[in-house]
Length: 348
Image 1 (cartoon, rainbow, N blue to C red):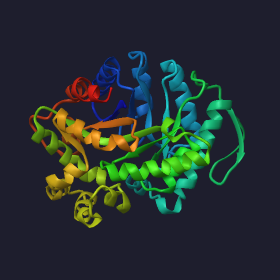
Image 2 (cartoon, rainbow, N blue to C red):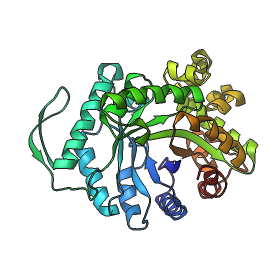
Image 3 (cartoon, one colour):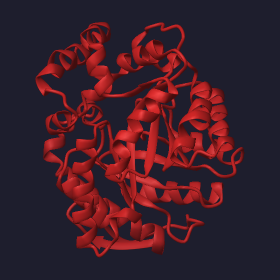
Image 4 (cartoon, helix red, strand yellow):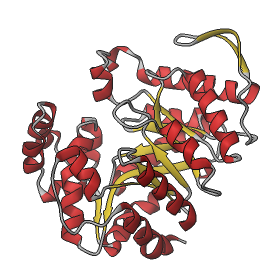
């Protein structure tokens, strides 16, 4: 089991760089960030972090191919790969539906899965060959080339998947792995694993060799109640992007989320948090003491998950997004150390 840190790059740059350096020192597999307009630019941040780290891998999880052209993603990844000495990777998706709406884009009209599959092949070709000629449904090129070249022989290109089943099958068939965001139950990961296997077999791959990442909201600390309250503050914001079938696989009635999503969509975050019950937050996060977080990861591990991508939630992020002050919540640095010292050894 590998452990990575999924950061929201909304701290000061100094704080973000310090957290990345610590994750590197502690031996985390990778640091990821969402390639979204809402946050500071991950490519610039990771470029700045490159010289101060030696082992940790870096890249977007995820980068939206609706908003960022795939050859530009490949160009940025190849440049980051050279800066890091071969430690870059990318996870692609169709994008955050809420963000797309703010660009006045209707995701239902973008053919999201077909677009991502084609983008994976574009990125793969541009990384491997440095040039591309293609007449595609979404992306077309005539002799486009780049001098940005990766250091790695094969820079990993993966897909994000939440809905399924075709998204999981496509991730295994066409890419180097799948980051499945915001699922927390054995049922949800068994479902993903079943379809990853189908897609891998279609391509003649062994699905167990793929990166099967669980991108999960994590809040870990000595004060279990404070950690769980921090997670509760963010659950509604994250859950608003979960499709109904995914909520059901996580034991949540989609109707239960409707008033929370309505409140958050209307800008009333306080009401959204008030409506998020502790029971709902517990279902949609890995929060609590190191022992509690370890137990939750143990529940999904038998499904074949081999990578925990921990979206760490601390008091600073909660205050940034919601304005709430929650005493007793461990900082990002403290949570990275707790994960390293008391959670990761259970999976070594």
